[in-house]
Image (cartoon, rainbow over all chains, first blue to last red):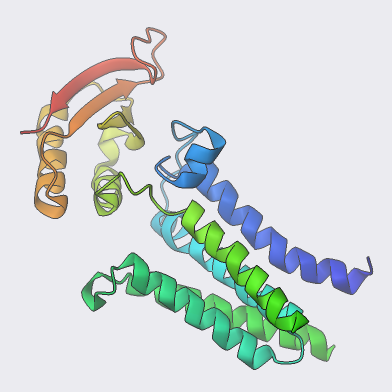
Length: 131
Length: 114
């Protein structure tokens, strides 16, 4: 594997790893992931600081959205705009589904953060390809 | 064709990840986990956080063995008002104690919400 390829894979895998670690270590074990891993209680609490809520509830989704967009754009090389659009559509759809398709129940903060990180992933890949 | 297949696989994998990290369906009040957590954060003197949810019981870990009667009332109210959940059981434990009498630590308080 050459260096460029390795860095692209790291852009996909590291955010996923970060998100999973936050879930496993710091979130209340009420997700399917916790059940799958047999985790019954939270291992530790994130120390109090101003960004604690953001890290627990938004950063994890941002990592997922970044990784999704990066992988779609990377593997769909010929049409990065189309890939980024597909990614944005998927993450918006998921947010709507989680809010039972009711505008008032959508976590707007989550959606905005995810769209930002999807855009960031697109820009990073474009910049890397331009180098 | 190959590209469509690759995109479909990526979307499938990431969709599965999203499902895996979403709250279990049998837990009808995900919103209230966040609200309870925010309530506990707003009371740093309690040194408490939501540790688990197991067998219909919300487990809260703390280092402070006082002032829980009123705070448990508030948590019951959060669940009743925001999530329409009644009869929630709340267990307050101190896991720094060496005297463990529950699977999560030493039991300080237990209450079933009205």
